[in-house]
Image 1 (cartoon, rainbow over the protein chains, first blue to last red):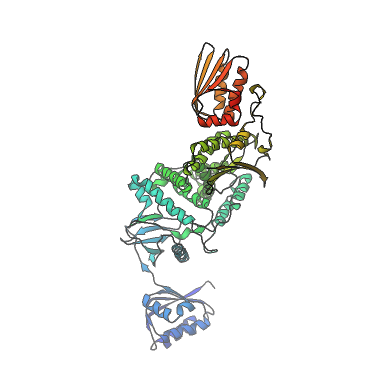
Image 2 (cartoon, chains in turn orange, cyan):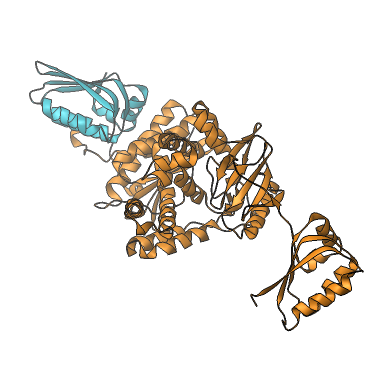
Length: 521
Length: 99
């Protein structure tokens, strides 16, 4: 079945020569029942209805027919007569040369070159890329319809032995180029880069239109089964499995070579990795692009991005802060660590698949990532994050982080100084309580969620831990009128909290201690 | 962050506190007190530059009060409004000498 009979069609086929063509074809095909036929129409100038009828008759005996290298004129005939619906008719591809052209972008599946002032071509690595090109065009169209600024290819071309797709991109400059040549534009780049990233992540995608990134991540984890200790591997699988389904878009390869400035418009390109999923998957691939790839050997980023590792680190860090809308380093660290888990998983798999274990340097790099991955897995309970929540070690050393995370939000809500201080006292009492008792003598995590609401203006702060069930509110209030000598040292914290907050509630639910403070602002 | 500026002269000790007296810094004050309280007859805490106090801080103050009972006098002065409120809520303003 896989054998194909290749037959050239040339010149003009009309009622004069059609009978002869039919005779020749039947002779050539005699004895080759049900063979697939590929007509090469490179030299075909014209085909009339008499010629088309020949093809139809041939098709009765040989249903698997394709026609390739069809010129635009002949393609129009096939199109008008409905033949393009009946059989596989493929246009001839324009040939484009990239010799001496500037490379302006690089993605997972190919590289992008500027072929003239107004146009770029994306050349695909895979020599059989027509399916990829079709996919990319479909998803780029989808993205455009859903409101994202991107470029859609208008032509498929041949570039040497590879396929390419051509886009109009007027005088565009990638953010990598801007950062490399105008470092003073870092602030602007961070803002615009994050604005567009949010727009992607806010985009809801209709069911089934894009692949689910979680499935892809699970396949990465599966690959690592033989390369990680079993305990960590199982936890890693659980962590990825537990990421909730999400129908919001992620770009999948969001870095500064794929974000371009055209005029005063910021566009994203290289859409073939578009998917849906939790944003942590996006942050993982961003971490890899800016840090992960180059963490072992810093020179990689310079080759890839055109700026150095320090610039890359600073940019990534600032992007993450802006994306998370916080200046709290602990919050940034929390989310970065989650992204790193998926990032390293992907890097290790990629490296092993490319023969990384066969060279000493490759082995060293893989083991570098593996150690980091294992320690992160041991110290992580889940991979999701929320802008309103800080997840941190339940340890008094983290108290300042918790306070910073909360006070930033209170300041933004114009919370009066005095109230801020009262909340601070209450937060300290509750958090130190959790740090001291929830997991003792072991350690664990605590989550702190801050929710502001209007009408009436109020804040609620929720503490969640998985430690031993303990209701601090059940304690009898201390006698605050006793003499100093009669008063026990301690036991005041919870009492102060109750007095200074407008409401304090506790519940134990799904294995969690949940304590909520409420304060009117 | 807490900075402790202590001045001890002839059985009279003045502790000027600046910053935050909380879970992290309270042990520093506790240690500083233990080192110097021997022979002290009059102990003053100057809270003029103290921005914040939590129950961990109150514990140290209460412990100091207990130590001083029978040995001499102790007072707390220059409380800011927030700290004053905390002293009131907890009844500390009734059991300590506040100026």
